Image 1 (cartoon, one colour):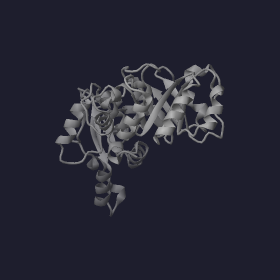
Image 2 (tube, rainbow, N blue to C red):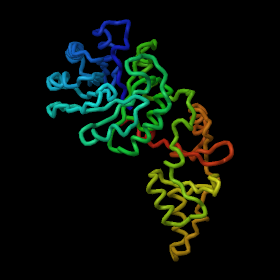
Image 3 (cartoon, one colour):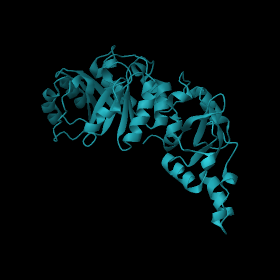
Image 4 (cartoon, rainbow, N blue to C red):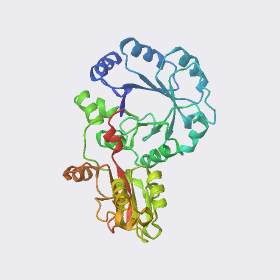
Length: 336
């Protein structure tokens, strides 16, 4: 996951000193917040003269057209406009602007507002705290909104701003978020490099629970045992794209799972007559599972104890009912 350092969050140093510190830290982007002030481009010019780090500009304004000439002039990498402040105006960013375009929304705005921009815009920015306020707490509602957006727009990138510390960063990386903005956490740390490593790589104890960021049951591959058939299993595995499907009892309790390997073994044992494939014999009735009230810290300790690499875990509640899935594919793929 890319880290975009919010340059105005450094209250102790001059802009030149902050730029020098960020150059030394090898941060991925420099995030510049603009609250309806064209003078921001003087700072952007200073950044460009003293750094080659990509600039990530977030504009909050009710008159976006005032900023279009500057966007044509400056070769910015990313520009984002805050949706709620547009007051119904449709963004018409000039085609001469070659950087990536994003739409920022607050926690109270539905992701459907991105629909009218989906053809031309590259990413959405989830404002997980109040825009313009530094040091706020991440609103966990955004975990579900991020998943919903990724399902609706699998080819669009997700950026996140607000309340991103090391523990939130771990969850966002696991969810496949492309970039997160960090301000107070970076600049209030004793060492920017250490804070940056925590945001990118560290596995930090979290106050958030598995149920806060897991795929819910209706987003997870599953089929009821009473409906078990080969086509249904294949469809569930194909739709879920996780390499397995959960098998549920009528009361939603987890009966077991069928994974790629389970299905291959079943087919191999039935090669002489595939019509006699016994799907019940393919079910792993003792899969590893995780409780939905586990913290991230407990989750990490759990998977580290296992000698086998874990790609996914069915999630259950205290009664054994399936509630969702967590998977680790984005962490395994690493920082792209």
